[in-house]
Length: 106
Image 1 (cartoon, rainbow, N blue to C red):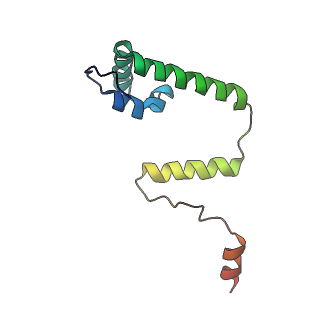
Image 2 (image 1 turned 135 degrees about the horizontal axis):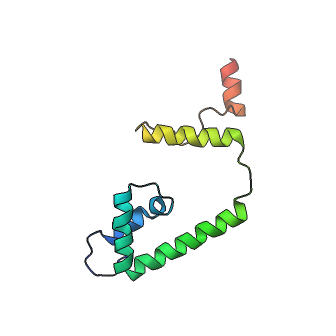
């Protein structure tokens, strides 16, 4: 998506990092760049508003559910691996399914 106008910060960069902006997980200087972009670019501002509304709706509908401790640990472990630049397996290597437990016992 692009409005077709030149901006200091490209629309694709803004949209690629929109959730980081929404979650305030980026440096303050980058947040300021995005805010300036939204003032100049109505399509990106519209997309931001839509994503912000979805985020609020999800929080309202699902925000009261407790996350199982083991799920939280697994997710945080994967995030740590990604941040460290390590390869993350496509499947849960800690799971002991029926095939693995039979092989491991032999």
